[in-house]
Image (cartoon, rainbow, N blue to C red; front, side, top):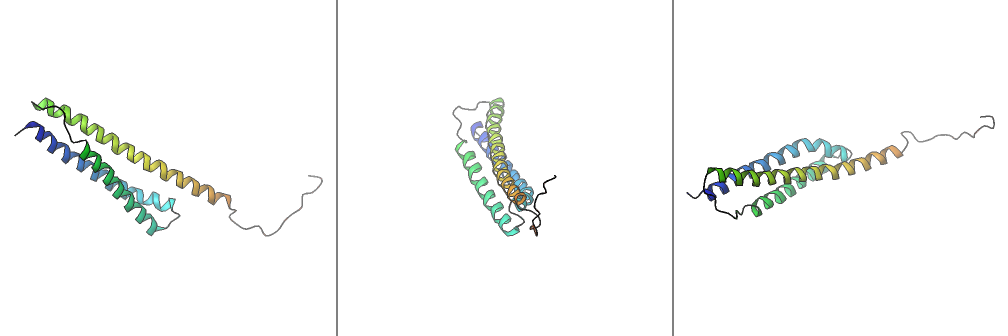
Length: 135
């Protein structure tokens, strides 16, 4: 069997497994964060979480497929490891950047919601007191 094909198969298996693992981890742990961002609206948090996971899969698996091409012929086991380390390293970096991008955007949304909640007094004012001249 051609070693380039072996490298392709290993690359696809590991990349897809990593993408699925990261997506499931982010979905499971991100649900609580989304519920907070969306002020406790559980249904909306689940819907947004699902949409984010679908987008995550599409972008990352699309990148994995586009990055599959190997320009040089792989002749030995060392070549397989070198090709896989480069390809999987780039896939891991893309997964990390996607994760950090999602967290950054959601944190901006969360901060804006916190600021809006803090601007409203917890209890509506019931009376007004005029300032005194001696104070």
